[in-house]
Length: 443
Image 1 (spheres, rainbow, N blue to C red):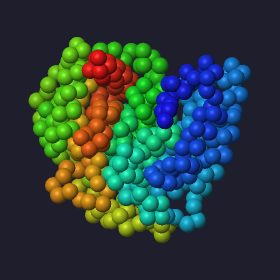
Image 2: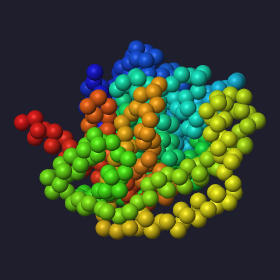
Image 3: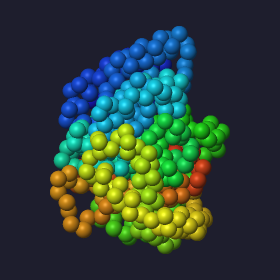
């Protein structure tokens, strides 16, 4: 199966060896054949996508080039508004809600010439589990394993070759965890760099939109269109040879040995190629960061859903109701204490990034576990991702190989606030070294 990337498809469009319509036909054929196995979409927008692909082809043939996403099929998580298309939020509301306006990021994608191929499946309101009305998203690497969440359909759909990229959301790791579990790249930018106008909120002080693609180069191309920051100038200033810091706190925490070994091997490859790598023994309160983040998330999610109860509550599944009960139990004092701790503990970030550009950690301490079996004492998936949400930092996960059971392992690169293009440049740098190392090992 040809796995087109945003970059390779863009080159093929421009040299005439591929057309947007032909690429869309290929993906729609895959969706028709394999989507029932993975359930990555809530809505496939075939009619809209075909019209957009034809328009893109005409524009490119006439010499009108909108940039790297022109004619590229992209999915969007189904808590992002697309005018005229039902918005489910992954929930069971009847009749469906049909927005009359696009989310701002959808407008940006359409202006860039992207082809919106469908609305991706997700955990209910990005907070519960998969709603029984839609069934669960399944991992393309092993349908008996978890795909991660909440942007599960986005990551699984890109991994399955149904779209070349997807827009998800990330409140405590919901782009990076499924990307790691499904063997894709996932980038959560600095807080506010991608507009959330027209995106259903979960916990506003932690919410981010993010991108899921096959690699860091594609993540940069997709983010470039959505970035409300300094854009191209920052791209040009991004460090070509970043200073990496490897946190022993994350490797010595609850990380499974196989994941730890993969990270160490990747770091060793960087060192062999002359990269600047420091081993950091800075103390990081990983569990406390996670607990503070989730207390804030539960409190803000319950507040957000108080405004949705009249229109949506009938469609809520029990896992979502259970989570909302946890949010209701968080007191105002508990919430304010967490916000105060976030401010007072910002020194953690200053210490971590004192002499480095990029913090390198596992994305998750584990690979994707079985769907139907609870493994006693196994670490939770999202142990290492909440820090970037709590302080609004840019973070990228990259696939760095497979476990002995054939499941993807992800490595997370995190930077300081507003260092988005440094993080993406570091990801591209890591991928080049990884590719070079793989080629050498095959000689």
